[in-house]
Amino acid sequence: MSGKRSSRSPVKWLLTGLILLTIAATAFVIRQCLDLAAGPSASVPETGAVPETAAPAQTLPAPTEPSTVPTEPEPERVVATAAISAQGDLLMHKPIFSSQSACWQEDGSYNFDSVFRYLTEYLATQDYSLANLETTFGGDAYPYQGWPLFNCPDAFADSLVRAGYDMILTANNHCYDTLMTGLNRSLELAREKGLDTLGTRLTQEEPRYSLVEVNGISLGMVCYTYTTSMQGDRPRLNGNSPVEDPSLVNYFRYTDLEGFYSELGGILAEMEAAGAQATILYIHWGEEYQLQENAVQREMAQKLCDMGIDVIVGGHPHVVQPVELLTGTEDPERKTVCLYSVGNAVSNQRRQNMNLNTGHTEDGLLVSMTFEQYSDGKVYLAQVRAVPTWVNMHNKNGGWEYNILPLTEAEQDQWQIRFELTDQEYQLARDSWQRTMDIVGPGQEQVDACLTQWKQDREAEYLRQARMGG
Image (cartoon, rainbow, N blue to C red):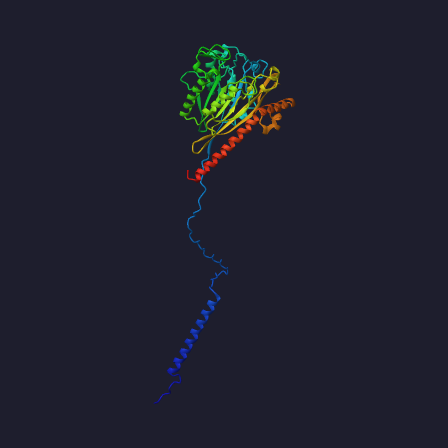
């Protein structure tokens, strides 16, 4: 029996498969091309929220070579300062502490705080303060009195401490007014109260000078007084009996200045060996009530400059004398500031009581000396500023009160309120300031200009050395 053959032969099936395969491949290629044209796809969460776009990749800066620009060299600089204040005579006349004065208390005791009421704030700005003690603490063995033989109640030492003083100068023509007992007792009491002393000493073993360290700066200080006369080899001070032990008092004779310079030269060498970085001489000299220094003072000042003293602070004339900038005789770089007399700090030498009826005995100077230490250890005198002072004597609560007033120019319009002055007292204060500035103003300007230029030159040289590598 014969059968029927199918119409779809193997050839037809092969052709049909090839066509279908070609169509599928073409569709795949078209889809890929469409995806490339549309850019990269982002998957969308099923919630339909659009995802944040990824931040573009950060490109790190290309590494650079280390900077070759040189830094500014650091020169030597100020690392410490010491401000020292000095005043003239604490000339304690009897009226200052009599029963009619504000210093006398009803129970018979004494309190001298009112003398320094307006000065304490200023002294607080200084690192170290001192004044000349123109009296003695002879105790009850001698009457409390003023001129000609001074002896003051012990309470005065307490008020000096409370006011802010650190040292009293004890070499002057009145330091032996209560003889050897008073000279020794004055030192013992002052030291017991916490005051340093300079000019006299208790034993020969004590140095004739003081090495005072202030903020790391070592200042060598020495104090001398002139002698009234000599009895053999013993000095007489204020016409008193000759000093029992002359070695305990720093004194000089106008008739033997070479001996003074020789002794002082030895002291300067001792101070330097002990580490003194600057030196100050306090000296009792000159003529009373003279508004100008005399020829001997000028001669001595020049010699002291040549010997290397940085500052000379003079007293004894009871009036203010000029300020002068001295230059070394052989070394023009050597400079010394000389204040020939800083006048009275406090006294009862009122103009109406004096033959010199001008008011100058009511005036004084509060001198501030500033020293600076640089990072190389060297110390320089940076400023000497003289502030005029005036003693206002007035009646308060039935007693006479004496106030030392620091008359700073910048606060002149505040004096009347600050110091509780009447119109008349305010005018007297202004007159005092003008008297003093007429005397010290020219020299003060000279000193200011020199020390300012000196510092500018010094720091310019330090900068030059730094840039040169030392």
